[in-house]
Length: 223
Image 1 (cartoon, rainbow, N blue to C red):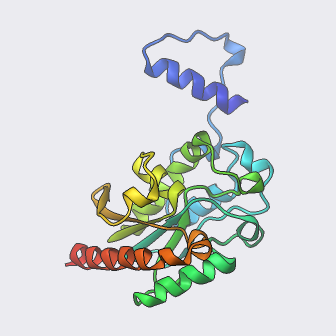
Image 2 (image 1 turned 45 degrees about the vertical axis):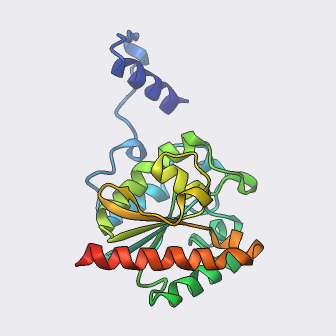
């Protein structure tokens, strides 16, 4: 509740509305998990995520899912949120969908160790529901800092939630995929989530086209 009050006052102040508070109700310095992530290195950022209480998901998670892979990777893979197995293990994209993602990466000469894999959310939403916009907003500074630290040549947004959140769009994946997007000057390609491809294998050829596009853009970005 304290963080919600702090946010509300910040919004009112940003709109130029004076906020008067009795002396005893003034918040102390913000806790570590609401401080800016802009200057954090990998270790500090990981610790901050592990201790985060920015939203209510911190009360139901088993583990935070920070991300895995090469911190200097050319490829950044961004998914939506941890599922039950990811929450248990603290690692993104495990289980059947993770195995398919590994196969997709191998097909383009990459691996889980050569790319960096992260999610929009670092905590699992209950019952694997879609992330709430407020939850994505609270987690966004962590992902932004990961992007800044990795400095990838290409970002692959995997699935609807990741693509819409990163691009600020409400378009379906089918309309966003197949073309180049841009995030902070980094080329971004949208493709289907491996879990969707397991249910709809006929769409794998489209996903392969997306991977080929991303490979070309990564090479051009590195040139």
